[in-house]
Length: 239
Length: 280
Picture (cartoon, each protein chain N blue to C red):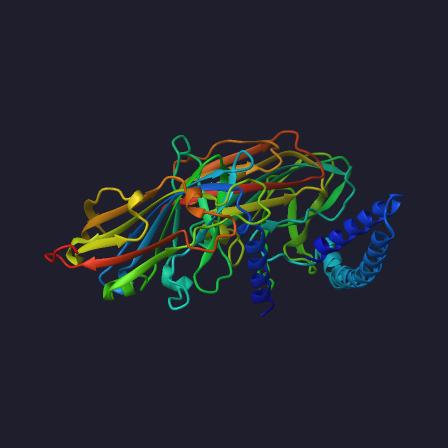
């Protein structure tokens, strides 16, 4: 009992100190694998984390994607795997990115500790988000992402630790074509085809080169990314 | 929050004081300043009271715990391991070269420690009190009893282990006959029920701590031997003392690194950071 309390206290302290303080910049590539079934919904995030203050970066942060209140995820659901990509010349020295679970109410979040700290760390978070695309499989699903922000006491002039992000929706060809609407045209990349975890798939990519342009005014409460996704079964004409 | 509010109040008071110092201030303005003063003081008195409660109460509550930690009774809930060094003997009675070999096994049962010690007596040495390498106990874990095997290079000398009951892993090695002028080389070897390196096996990260504050250390060597499941490994003493070789495979396919200090810092605590990438 006392130990559980201590761990909860520790998580709270980590969340409030390191979790909310982001002296790093992040470039991300997020691939959403849209499954035929809820348990096939996967997410893979590639991160390149570099220091914003100081010569090296000691930690980053992970937040699992969930649809919010009606889509709660647990640590057991997401089966998180973090891997750090080894840099050339580091063969003899183990490079780790270890995660420390933080408190979470609706979706798991974690502090990612880098051992050793470096001037740039590449790491990948692969996890499941079962049921993330449940609404899409039935009709139109909004894709809403309130991008990560720096805390109020951040000494830099940044709005977000995130600088660039590429979002890819990977849809098995058998599930049909994906229609993405909303203010996303500007970021659209050509559709590509390759093999996904659920067979041959199409990749619908959106590349946001400068996240700060999306964030608007400091007190803006609008979600910077609010798109609508819909599947059109093969053979039916595009509207 | 409380702090920020207090600071705002203080600057308001400072502002009011300097405003009052201006001879050109009108009577109306002066009344406003006086009101600000009165309000400020009342708010500040309440805030100070709250602050006093906040600051003093936890200090009282936590004091006994801090004392406990300082005296070394509390066992932190980490998997780091430690030895507490030896009971202060007369530091002038001997010097001792120490060669530690820690074998990090595939399972907890395979962890092994060899402590090879060369004791050069300056006066008669009847016994050596020392602490074995132990894992940091998890809270609630029962005490384990370890019986080290003892071997003395000189067949004329015998050595016996006398455990000291108060502290896990602490005991005395008694020499018969006592060492007088010739160097005695002897070896302790043991394993630990439940293992020593569980954290390193599961997370690949660990800290090895060793305390030589209570005996006069000569040459100091630590040999780290990893079971063949290790792909690559890294070790470094935190204070950059001594010198470690890179991990390299021995003839059994185990990665081995040797850390040495010929003239180690005396009365010091050593801490080695270990990182191991295990084959999946």
